[in-house]
Length: 377
Image (cartoon, rainbow, N blue to C red; front, side):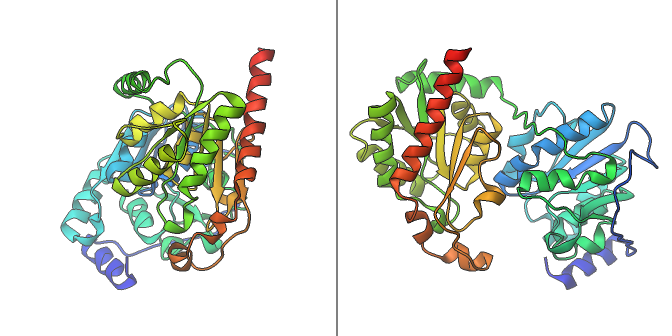
């Protein structure tokens, strides 16, 4: 959102005063009651919405009687609806900020919920505007380079978060509320209808009741694509070494073609997944023994449902946004640096530098660990 448009919006909505300050850590909740009303703001990007799920659980653990809501845009709401630690999901229309009339409707909707605190995970102008429009007197954000655009002006408690992974970065924003190094729990919800879809689909594909791997060849950027034929070779390896078949998943016609390439190069050891929604894909992935894919939403979805995950990285930093947690693995030959635009428009040289042996070795290690744990139990 352009700065001029932002200030025009502020003027039309009738508020102009902001008081940001760098927030030192304070023990407890010094100026709030025991049942605060808290708004989490992470509007877009499926992977980043998933990264924010542990924030809801950390808040619930600290404030069991709180009213906790999440402001999100469009279809990303499907991922968090039904989360056990959320009381409400405020689903905003996409591009709400382009219309003053729609922005006023959003403001009224938020103000009716009487928030005390807003936690801006996204830290862009539009997310900080949502936090500000909520009427929350405490608006938590980040200092430094991760507080982007006008968020450091609109948010009034800024924490200098030092974290190596985006999940921990989001949790670090909660420090002014007395929440420090909380346990990471995603608690990804599963609807009964999605579970039924997954069970029936796996049965039709002859994968029900057995181990299988989910292979996801798609990505939001072409520069994040690992060659589909290598996934096909990986499927052959998983069968020959571990007796595990593979399921090639996809979203959209372009990804379907990539998934079909996996099937075509796998000697029949990979099967094509049906068309799925994101929540249906989550239900299928939850039942898998392994997930392999690049830095994209389905990979983070796999982590959130507890499936052992191997993430592949080229134009994104594995340590920052890779598969989170000690049971998962992140692979990167080298980081293809540049601005966001340059990395988006780059070729997939860095992804191609991840050779097949790197991935098969990671799969072998992960599956071997699983087998040892299964025998021990």
